[in-house]
Amino acid sequence: MRPDVPRLATVHSLLSAWARCQQIDVRRYRASGNRGTLLDRDFSLGQGARWLADRVLDGWLPPSLIVDHHSHVPLFSRLMLAPEAMAWRNRLMTGGCARDPSAGSIRRLNQVESATLRRCPTCVALDQLRYGHAHWRLHHQWPVARHCAEHGDALETCCSRCKSPFTRHGAPHLADDPCPLCGGVRGEAKAWAAPPGYWPMLREMFRLLQLGLCESDEIPFAMPVRGWTPRGIGAMIERKGLPAPVHQTLSAWRVDSLPKLANQLGENWVWFNSHETSAHRHQWPPLVSLAIRVSGIVASNEDSTETWRPAGAPVPAAKPGAGRLAA
Image (cartoon, rainbow, N blue to C red; front, side):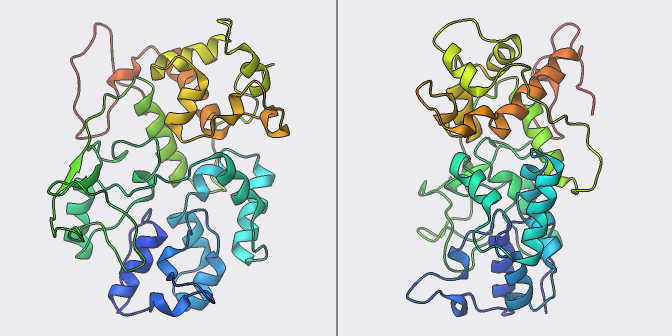
């Protein structure tokens, strides 16, 4: 019996569920001279989708669903120009490029997923009711994410008994499995004070992750700060004359520099090194660009950025005149 897997479950979780049902043998797909299993490979940006569909899953799950429902491709493709995004997705569908240039470019300058796994307790409980076991979700693994964008719960990052972090394994591993070190089943979330810019950014990333490539979207692809490149911004960091949109974004995230913002978002700081001369610094880092756009949209709205929370999230005391951010 093939398991039912929810949309936005990671490929690692999908393959673990299939292995638990004895539909695949993860050790069968070791590379020559490599002790790792199928679950040690990284499929987070859709690499190998055609191979997985044809050779591992026997055509039961098409490559389009692997890419669109179980990878971060929808998010990052929305931060590209449309022709580039379409070409990337077509390469993933055909499996014609062993080392995908788009995925390589993203990985060089972005941490796509955190080093350790995270889970939402509400997602775990709902999955257990529906599927009998819980899955790891894509939007829980973003470096910037401290909460579930769907339920608002703080993400559990480690075992509450032995404090060991949740990590990926070469063996089948699902979100509600007992701790491999102590057998504990309860997780623990770290306390974190969210800045005003955090929730709108998390919500926008979650929205983009769920969009299909052909669905309409209002995000413009021009430079987020007209007339400024990251190289120009880098030269201004040591002074206090930053453009208003950048200053506004830093205030929303309660940081005093773009490198610190990039670090929170999982972006590489090299974009803002004033001594760096690489050609990539003529374009904005995708998540920094998105953060600037989101901060501008929120600032132009009459409502406060601090009042929006997903269902179930704690709501602070309301400020005079504050309302809910329009969906």
